Image 1 (cartoon, rainbow, N blue to C red):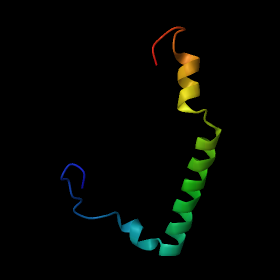
Image 2: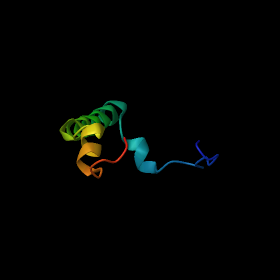
Image 3: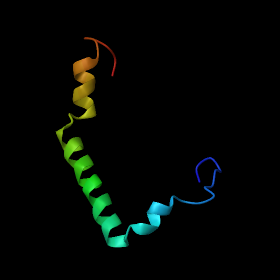
Length: 57
């Protein structure tokens, strides 16, 4: 993985979750993230609102 750390095992509860239930759960998380991101202003708009007047881009 990212820093060379490999888990020795996973939590036993992970074996009790079916593939379909896991896919549905993760899709729900993705949908929530998409909804929140859609409400955020663009980065350019954020910079324009927070950058001091006359500051370089």
